[in-house]
Image (cartoon, rainbow, N blue to C red; front, side):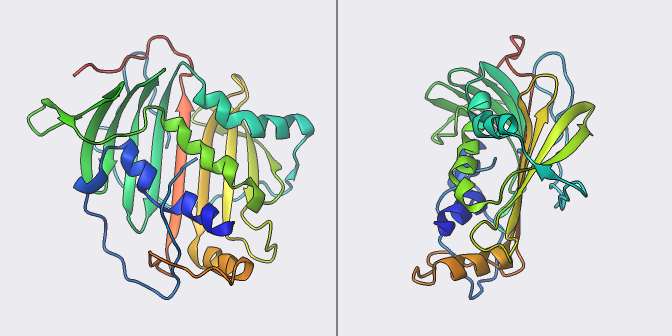
Length: 280
């Protein structure tokens, strides 16, 4: 149902786990409104990665991400059968890589996240950046998680972040029932990479309302997903949810009427054997 779509793209739960913030973080206070929707899960399908040849490229002083408004090409066309098949497999292709570099930006009333890092299969992950106003550096190897503290020493953490950040793309797949037909918006150059851009609106069951936008960029050379972006307009999403499911009472969380939820992930250096995860 639409509530699950909303939940999937507007809560910080999984992303806070990804950055190992958890209860240690203090979310930005928000003003309750009459538009209440249950929020209990999180996703993100994808920031612009910095180039590097070894190790992890890191922003020295990460800043809060902007809130871009994505506009598709003026004359988009429906995707081909081959492109639709690629869209359906894009998440799994990234999830099953042996290694990759990733970046993540998220803005919501609960706070901002701006991190990047690396993943090495099957269970090694490193990320560093700004999360809810604090600079954080996290490593997970197997079932053990470590966080670097102020004196530069790695200390064990009781948090349990995702080992494979690409798993956050799964919620995009779950939300396909609620989005319009995918359109091909043309080729674009992103960070020097030639990409195919695909766009869909979050409005399939209420076409008069555009509650949000989903965008995917495919690296033309590698055929892997380069960037995934979701941008949700809160008032429209609340109106759509209410129209589709008036029988389901909103619960548990007050969504500010003027809130915008934005999440973006990028993936580069796919299957790069030179990627190494720091050992605490």
